[in-house]
Image 1 (cartoon, one colour):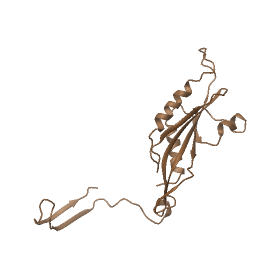
Image 2 (cartoon, one colour):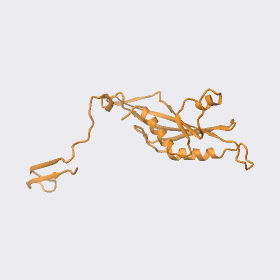
Image 3 (cartoon, one colour):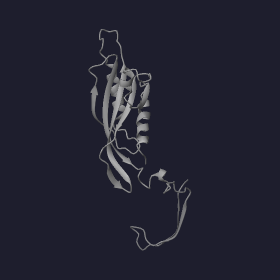
Image 4 (tube, one colour):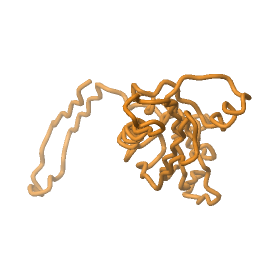
Amino acid sequence: MAGIKQPIQDLMNRLREIPELQYVRVWNNQIQSRKQGQHYDYPTPAAFVEVINSPVWEEIGMGFQGADLGVTIHLEHEYYDAQDGTFEQDLIVFDLRDKIVAKLSLYEATACGPLVKTGESQSYDHDNVYEYTIDFACHFIDSKGSPYDPDAGKFIDKTPPTGLQVVVNEVNSIVGRENTPIHDITFKIPQ
């Protein structure tokens, strides 16, 4: 059970598993701000996670609500020249795109269904900084309005005791062996 913060952190951690990505953060229009000199410098390739909250939420019951979320990954890659006569042709960004799609497709962040790619777009008017966006969608269940959310403090979720021993003195019937009394059966649940 979770609010929206945990799935965002899960997505960023999943992207950090791609060794080529040098920087992963929540989207805050960093690429445009950086180009305008209004943002701090960061290493590239970089990936930024933007979550587009749904305007339509459905009550599931007991305070749980569900909605489809949009997730956009903004991929930033700085590229100059491959020195092979293909000036301004950044093909590396497509390798990075493929790795992101492979890493996130069908991934299930906390409280989310599987991510499905819904679209992508590439920059056609760029300098040495290339931006590529990849769109995904998933269903999210928000438990923060429910008394059953662990953070609500109203209910305690805990593992049942281990080493439990159940002693049955008499069983009146067992399917397939009706009317056959069985005495002194002991069930042990291992720890």
